[in-house]
Image (cartoon, rainbow, N blue to C red; front, side, top):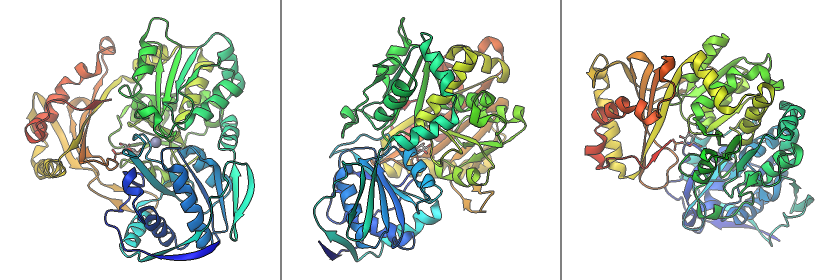
Length: 543
Ligand code: G1P
Ligand code: ZN
């Protein structure tokens, strides 16, 4: 076992995006690529010597190899201890929990979330801070700065460490504790929800289908839903994590979780359906014959928080990302609590959660979570829903109907135009920004724009300022259109167009969202010139 200092040179483009550094796997596998970035993390966090880190990933191709490299680099740079999930597996929420529970100095999560996995697909590395949340921009900036001047890194030359056996081992002077990836997470869930009530529901003939999409939540869902809560064996499908996620996109939305949608829309559908993503932080919620949008889901959770033990009497505030629909705002108003509007990305919720300003947070991109950890949490959302269903004994559709009757319905859809030419995408956004000052007051396709701006955020806790977070057009009657470019894509640019319209007429609660939003779709194209600039007449994905 020898400590080696390997000469290297800075590699361009190692700038962390919305959620860590994400690249094609073969790029991560190039000589020094992963190593340079890890060395930059050590610099960005002020060195790893003497520190305790959590390490794990979603099991995608290269997860195990990358984990071994990180162990050797951490040991070489004097880390005190690494707590690693067995076989280097940890869902993102479980990693966040471990960092917090063990008071670690942070953690490294190996994942590209919902992006496909495999040698030709995507890989990612994310650093989380001691609060268990994704590193804030100030830290990722330091890491990026460091990538620009790396000229060597330290690593120990040795055989692979055995990370398949639970218990403690070591590498040079560094301790390695291999933990069960599920156990601590399950314990946490038991403290938040009424497991007895949910068990009663599941024993009363209530059926569910959880599609793990061949990704990390398989073992978690099997242990918790089938094991602890007694869901019928086979309720969890595609429950064995695969390095290529069975060649699918582990993205829980109606496009990529089509099989679940088909089951839930069938005549003999289960009462409840759900899916999670590659690393377990996203969720999709369905009932028999109904899909609940993530924006509605977070609003429903907040509205029913009194039914759930950990949240009863504990709702200090809520938060949503700017493009997420304003259904949550209406609930907050009713509850008399603040609703914060943040830029896209879970990292912006961290300060609000730490400061006790928000209890429940959500993003339209299927991310929902709370102050129990500092990441969004797919299974948590599933258990929250099950707890509500167990208390009310209403169906998912009845809960939704009741919600709309009380708050109105914020029809919502996101249209994604993927892999468009980066220059075309940037020009489109620039042209939109250039028009902002003249848009307010204009009437387009019969709707009056009341406000047009480029969203900027002043963090109410640390005062940090984030600008250019997306162009937002507000319209009369509670409608909105938001345009932004994805910060997680790995190919060209992805234009996201978020469409929302509020309907309060009780007779118009059951429209098809695409029809209800037809005006908004037309306005979006008129204002941003999407079809003429990109040549696309249809989005690639509608969620
Ligand atoms: C996407 C989602 C965003 C989420 C992020 C990480 O980012 O839109 O809400 O936080 O993935 O899961 P985007 O590609 O839009 O930058
Ligand atoms: Zn994810």
